[in-house]
Length: 70
Image 1 (spheres, rainbow, N blue to C red):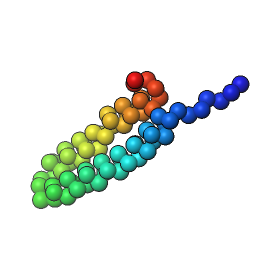
Image 2: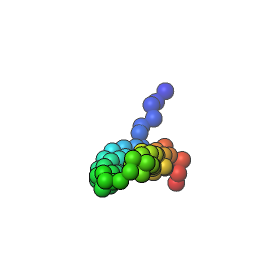
Image 3: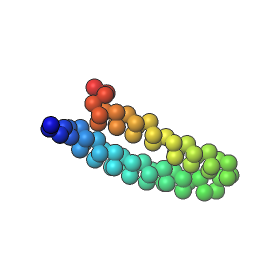
């Protein structure tokens, strides 16, 4: 029985995921700093949206890494 080797997509995807999420976090925090003088409702809505928005690109990238998205 031979073990499957990870594809190059896995390495590329993990690198992209780490770098992408890091850049996204810095961007989201920078935009959040601009909201300091606004109401609590606007800030809360922004952080909820920003906290969920990264899921779709990450989901697509993980699907691509697995070879499901050609």
